[in-house]
Image (cartoon, rainbow, N blue to C red; front, side, top):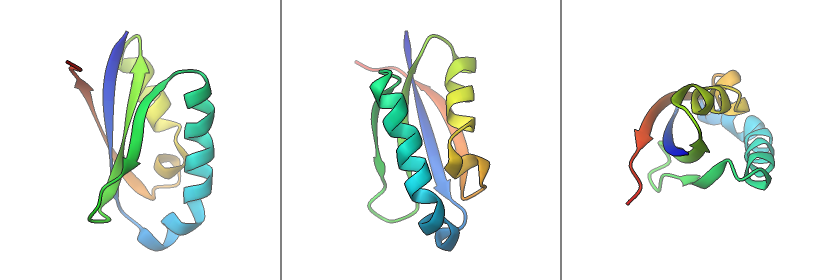
Length: 85
């Protein structure tokens, strides 16, 4: 089991207002499955971060790419393995 940080860089702040409820609903479902370690927006409004819990990078990438914020091109995804201490 590993941790993967999805940096979600804001691309379209106006469309984000419309897509944000879908994004939060998607993450809430994954939280129930224990697939999300933590999540939240950046204080400067430039986007946010989700830390996924997954067996592989590929699994985390699939989870992150299926986020409505990413599929609707509201935010640009950057995914990195995170070494939790």
